[in-house]
Amino acid sequence: MMKPLQFGSLVYVRYRDHVLFKDVDPVTATPFTRECVGWLDYDGEDHIRLVWERFAMPDPPSESKPRATGLVIMKKAIVEMKRIG
Image (cartoon, rainbow, N blue to C red; front, side, top):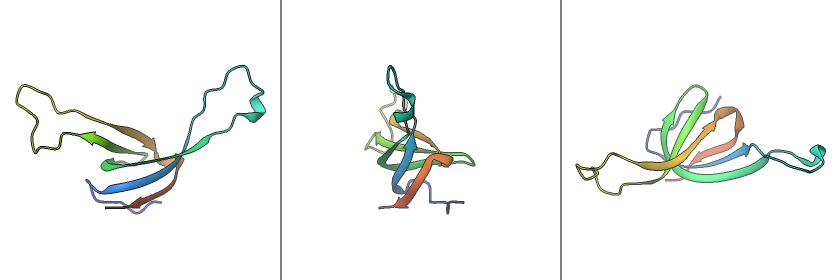
């Protein structure tokens, strides 16, 4: 089991990703190992959520909803995760 990291930590994650294949020999289709960097936004029992793009100011403008871009990764797929910031 992974050691929990603090919410907001900047982390590096290597993970196994799904692969869609079409018109190839199925034997050659295997998961890719990918990597990403982001702020840990959620650390649940079975998945994490990383944010890699967000508002830089403390609060978004009042006429705007909070928005961010990131990735949800299943913990079973994580190969390596470490704090970098």
